[in-house]
Length: 438
Image (tube, one colour):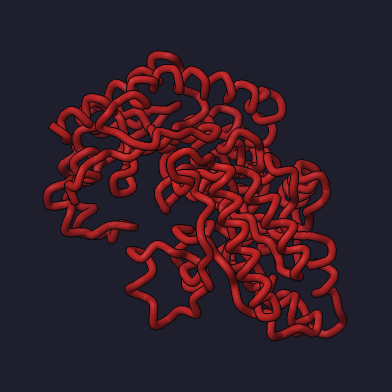
């Protein structure tokens, strides 16, 4: 098979996600035959460095031998069984290990397949908790400006990215939106912490007026990813936790993108020294091999549903909830974190990539170069509406997969880059910028 063969067949048969399909008349799909480590390879033998971890999912490189071996072993014993009325060892072991990682402040994992479904679960649990607790008026949600939480209807209702949300506005019950703690909003002579404090004051004002109908605040801790990699000081999370406690509002931490070590700690909220009421995980939890998402919550929330009355239970379900294969991949991912000291290795790798990226930080054509953990981002100073598409093409021509968010170029690579690959990531970025901004 050739690239051209698969391109033709795909365009005739597949509706691709997050895409205006007509764009593929000028920006061809990239057919991938195989992947290994941080590399993707097409049918013509061309290789591409996966600079965005295949939509932020792939942590340890493609085809990691430990995850592959765990999946093979699991496939020999149990591929799937429904989790309603049944249980199995991988889902129990994964839930136990995640609870331990969360210091047992959170537990009782509820499983789904993708991040948006996890957000839906957390929103429904929060609202239903308040109903079971005799406070049914608390059924509204609060979200941050520029936040993104997925594209199902509940998740879209707490998303503040018009491109994704506006077409479906008639179907939504929109959340209230409060200012983002985005450090770029601080202004001259002020710090990211100042921006966090400003946003916390706005949150305080809103909760003072609306706490009686507010079920939960949802945040992406430390980095608002799809909204442009907006990074904020951990002080905002500390203030938000205290304000939610004061006003009887749940705090939902959407760590779908920033969890699993991406922010520098295993859970991003750890850096604020707080615990949320709900924690959403997906993407990297299986090392980027199989779809899995989950919500962790507190004993207090769990106990509010524990009752003789069926209607007080959480009657949400997905056919592949807690799939044994996906859970086994997640357990292998946690083994790698624990036994290979991934967080310490990531600190060294992040420092190496930051040193390689120094020319980008100093480039006058760019603004707001920033870094949190294993995420880097900057803005290109251009009014070209086609910048993202043109940059992506130029980066691919130089052997690197990058996919800007508007004018925001970001790196979110697998945790396995070597020095040569880090150099290629930066060199290809500079070359693409030279071509597009010339």
